[in-house]
Length: 361
Image (cartoon, rainbow, N blue to C red; front, side, top):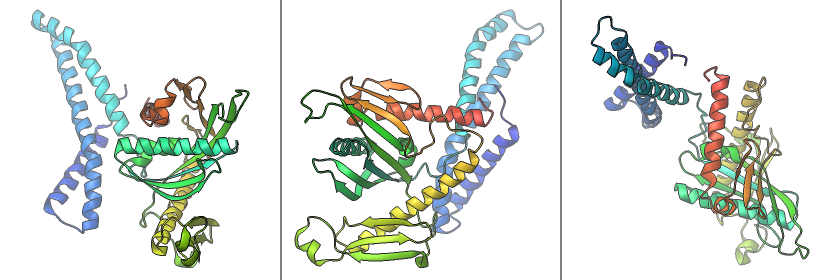
């Protein structure tokens, strides 16, 4: 167990005092107060962890001093010797907890997210599976108190989705969903399969942190904006109103099409939100590639084509291939109630990888 540099911990405590004092004085603009409030909410648990770690270290030092005291009371020394294992365990736990708190934070973790699900190989079965995945995430979001709003959708011919894009709004959404990006595979017997043969199909999931205007600045001169009538069923509204929006970001070639709302203004706002998320994700991916040039993440690259999970209906199991974890809880997984087990395991593996990279394991 490597002790933490005292200067590093002291600097965090000093910063906590400065932020607390500034907020108490009410100085600064409303924007700076919001930023400082967020920083304080991040610092509070770390400060508590520092105090717990230092208290555990002081307690162990006191116990060891009693044991080593020359000519000390034998009864007190025996009592201290009996307490030492618990004191050591307490310090190890406090050290581990603080280690995790001090790991580099993903700046996007607290953000809402854009969820994109697209049917892959498998035709109608793939579209049905994409629908299963969307309902799974929607139910999971409901358990977390998050709000899901569909931005765009293209339904499959027999149900499900060829493609669905949605906003998942709430604090910490990206932190919980970011490891879902990749190719999801399903193995089951389709209703139309007379011979009872198992078919394999797939869908891809992309989870992008929702970017605010302060995260990504988009110049109007870089945009080509087209308006058009909404496509598909919709009655008189579709025939008369050019509410659909297509935005092309010329430098990157990214094209966003949104037609869900009847208001052109709302569709444009949603299209811009999705464009910022895609540009922000591209920027983050480029930075991550540079940082990870000398190592590959144990939790997966996040590549949309990487097969990350298999849902096997005949055996009622779900397997995450990145961490070789299998749960025989398929129904609970699709209901959103068991997803936390996989997410927690992925987060733990990611933390272990970060600790190894920091030389703190």
